[in-house]
Image (cartoon, rainbow, N blue to C red; front, side, top):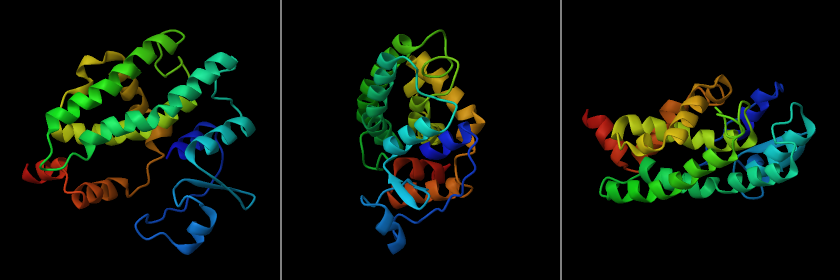
Length: 211
């Protein structure tokens, strides 16, 4: 999804082929050494891993979404590297099992949101609304998919996680309202996401079906 956001932001024409990650086709495994998505085919040459694809797109297609200042660019890359930690914190809530301790998971998520709240206050030039300031960056594209998924589950579980984090909350609202982010979701995403919540026997699925 990150790659699609960037392709939209750069107005690049592209085709998307979606696959079932539970039944990966042989042709996909041949071009994806790690068996993961996304994979970007450039003149039949496969590029894989989200960070690598994002960096490639930013190098070869204008407009440049990375900061021009090399120090700030390096700091942006460092915060992109924080995405897996941040995602794990939010996913602890998103995919909380029926028999899990939700309060404990929210407390764990707060630790990572704390760090991102501080980063938004420190890294921006001006008041935003994006990570660096007024324009979408690679950092925004990296975090947006996880904030989208969390927002869906937060509407169900109502943990109030982001209530104490005005910068992260406003940033999330900005990303979720951005057409480049919205249009990156496949048409069947709501159905597939609900199916994933059901397969994992999540608390969100139970609450949604009890309503």
